[in-house]
Length: 79
Image 1 (cartoon, rainbow, N blue to C red):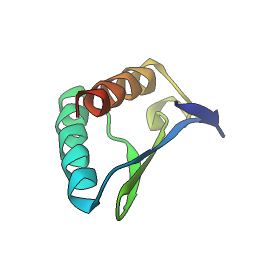
Image 2: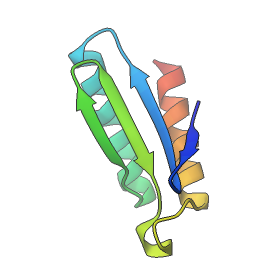
Image 3: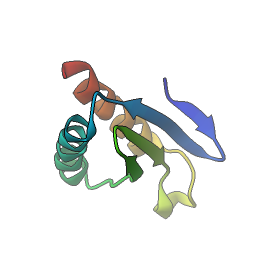
Image 4: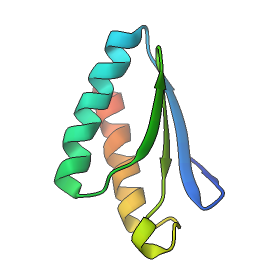
């Protein structure tokens, strides 16, 4: 579930191992590039954490962030 924290949509995903986490990140990168909306994210072994906000809108949550969050969720659900 995505949470709103400090004007960002935040979510952490956990996987079996690093390889699965990295494969997920690769799929998200492709979608983010198509959307021209790039997330802040971090990866530590089997965990991937996202913080979504729109810089051009003053670092607040916009429809772009909500659309990317939905796309990320679809990728995760398809795994």
